[in-house]
Image (cartoon, helix red, strand yellow):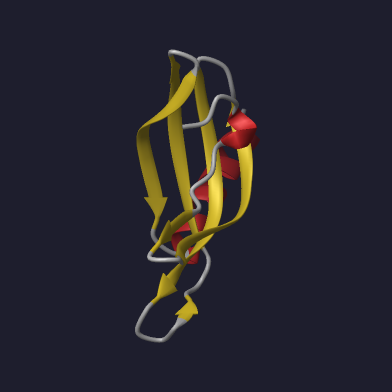
Length: 95
């Protein structure tokens, strides 16, 4: 497990194949609790290629010097991602 926020990743290899490939990440908050949003792709074994971009938000808690994942929210599509962005922009604009 990671000791710093920058070491956190969702890369995952199974049987020598990187089945989850992290493309990018943005640290939204850090400290005893950290929040990170990732852009990633998953390996499609049937097609032998990576699928479309996906997004996930992960929350980590630092305990005993290491970050441990406590929760996650997977954004299911680009359309859902756009809707989240639009809602946040609307709310921020209203303030």
